[in-house]
Length: 447
Image (cartoon, rainbow, N blue to C red; front, side):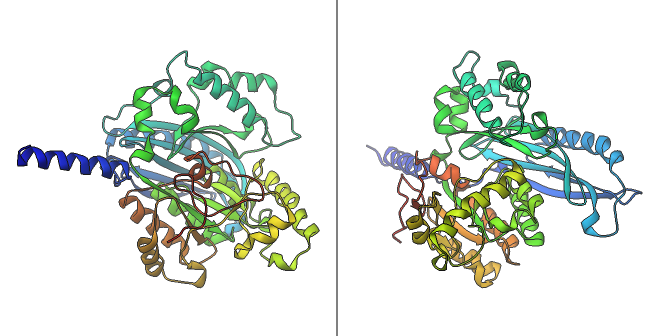
């Protein structure tokens, strides 16, 4: 073999190995800048509109047109606002964006109307594009006509939507319509690191509720039914390394709000482990965490040392957490993180949750600066890590933004806890502890 051919061969092997290791950095076509526009109306109500600046002006214009329509229609109907932040009257028109593959991106435009911080209405519109060509991607581009995928989607929609708000009546005729192939073909959807999500306003089935409902299908279960192009654009494990960004101890009014804002700006989804006895007081923030596409888990009912609690008290926490979460978002969380990581006591009590630990502690709970947190993450991050942060801390919102931006440039894609384990086919089991997930290994990270 001649030297040029040998060089080309070795270069090809290197690139192939790099790709299989998840070496792709953030693609230029996936870069997004966001800005906000605030308009205070004569009655003191506020319209806040977030704009996106993507690689394609045509996409920006289409997203902005959706936002402008929401602002023009909802703005005039906002009631008089009070003088303090607690008696607000506003509509927040926000854009969630997420990437998959090397060129596809999804955008979820949400118009969330609140009065005195209570959610009084919510609408959404989704768009997915090939960011190299500007071509809009429809569900029919992902699943061929006549594919078994439509039956799978229909079954998932029926099962999941009727699980929300247990005990409340869901009109069967409306459910049937939402599950029809015709409705599914035009359903609002978004694509993420390891999942396709169908989005529905809760008011479609439960008129007194204004939060959102999600139907999530993990790529491994639906990729065999996809078109070849869609299979390529959802094969993120071939392109990127993965991690899960998690937050404990919230919600709190300011820092949780800022953390959510920075996650939106960076296009990253996270997992929030909320304290059960804080859910009711901050139900609007728990709703936002859920409605903005993040995963929500429990951090016990109170932030106490479980070694000082009786078995009966520990077992009682699950029902108390579930009751508060059902009231806030209409569905329960399915896993827990124990304060201080004291999971053995919970397992002995057979409380029944899967327990999510972590493999990379940022030590933000010690009040470390953003630069110190970021330095630790950059030094220690590994594929499949679960990163521990705390959204009650003042530096954490900015730390979250910089962690997201830095790791995306290093070839990482952020997954929710559900996605992180689903990528390897790991089912989270009750009274079992999980530390990270890489190639199916969920044990304590060795180094």
